[in-house]
Length: 387
Image 1: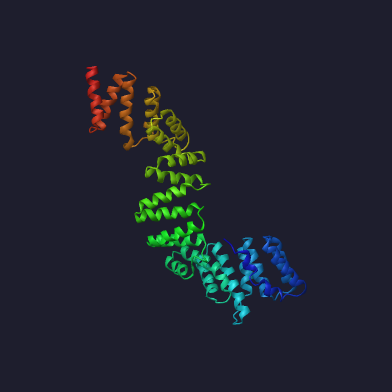
Image 2: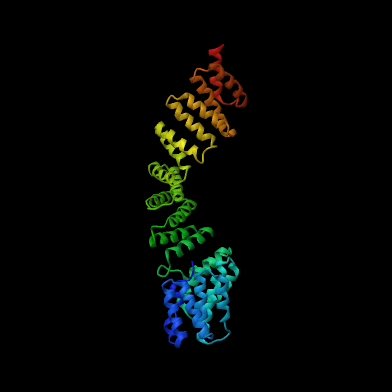
């Protein structure tokens, strides 16, 4: 977020008339180069103009603004500070407004938000060149927000932002501020404005989804999730987030599509949830493939994933493979999933006809989990079978 191209040229028509000879021509060429995004060329032209006439304040301003676009913030600040004057003349006040704004930008992009705020406030306070205020306000509200001054940021938005002059990004930013301040109704209205102005940006939907959740408006939240899921070009992270949210509200068909999209684009965890969905439908071969993809990536030490894979193999009659995965899972388990893994180990040993080992494990594990009724039942059956 730097200055708009219109900024440098906002007074160009009037100022070009004040130039003369070589300095004026160089200045004019610099304006044209700046408009075309040729900032190195523009800088060269403005420096030429200054070498021929070092007393023109506007030459320093344009040089400073061009240096900002080149991210040479210290040099830009030096050029802009040089021409700040304490004078009530209208032209000087206009130049000071532009210079203060530019200096604020340099501090902002160096992370000096308190200093940036100071200069943006000076620029905004000057009543001349009101057409610059929209750009100044965007930076100033951002600086307030970064300084934690949400009250002043909101105050500024309230005095300036309207449907006619606000962009989608402006409404989104105010929506975030309102959300953080507890104004859920206002934040939802702002996110709606942002979406109306630009319905293709996922962030706007994300903001509204969170606000609706906090407001307890579940039906509207689900509608918003579905609308967001229709967006083209979702990132892998965005697709995964939406898939998780849709899964939570039982919109499994769309969730599955988005998990597939996320998995194909590098979110390995998506394959775990694809495995869950396919296992739920008893599509064990497909579920097995998903769990294996997950384990081969980010799930290499996920004990529960090994357990789920074991259940898939068991459902297909592959008891040896199932037992192998249970044992792998036991290498990474915690108290929470150890109980289920140990129980499945006993069951699989039974299915493989290894009743003595099944009994020994069941007896040992019943001491660890004496309240597990299913395990105690298996132990009694094995005891009756063997003795």
